[in-house]
Length: 287
Image (tube, rainbow, N blue to C red; front, side, top):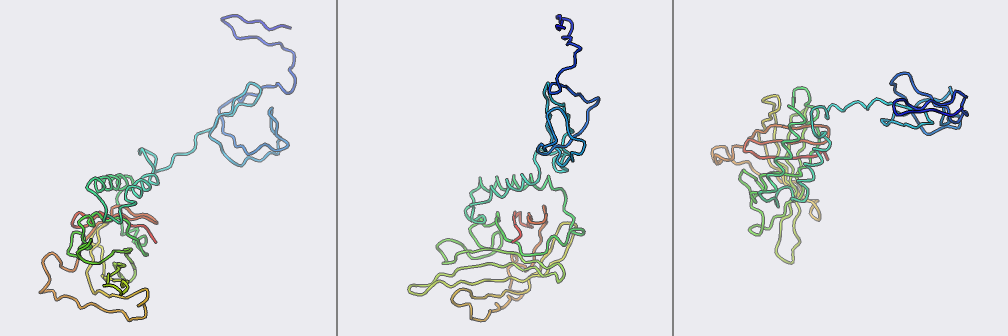
């Protein structure tokens, strides 16, 4: 029997049963299905009743001869709700901005502004840090990858410190913070290379500035200086460490009180962002 149609009515198909391969099966309601690669028991017109569903797919498969699947969208990540970018993307953006800046020593004013803006985006997405609950996340050895204070061209940043460049033959190596939440130890570890006149070889040393820390707020930390130890490495690693005498408090300049404060503005399992009491932005990754 031929089909009849008009502009006002959809086509009316023959009531004769179509071949099995052309059978159209429509679900009675929107439902969620799961698919894996077709098994030998699965065909385009249906599925074997013993077929096991494994993987959810957020796509709509539609064909005049196939089943129609309407799948629910995947659940939204908590980071994506109300935010334009997930935290992972913002972290990558910040790390990309500060890479190649030699921990801030090579940062221009424009570089500093970009790093600050990227850090603020990450801080806003991460929310407030509560170290009273997440103090264990501070534990470990953290590698400094950026400090805005190093753009001052001194190793002390916004605090007194030896200048970089050609005035003194000092090359800055890696900088770490080693934090022990049980003993409250907070050590700044700096690797340095000290130049020497020819034919002597440069001397490699590691300076450890030992501090104690305490929480003075939900996200603020105060560190108090205790001592500095210098240990030669490389060819002179057999030499014993040298403890640098501490300057008496009465002789300390007002700008070097031996203590400092900073706020942890972002913290997760492998990344930490802090802002110091002298507007210093620092970015660390767990090493």
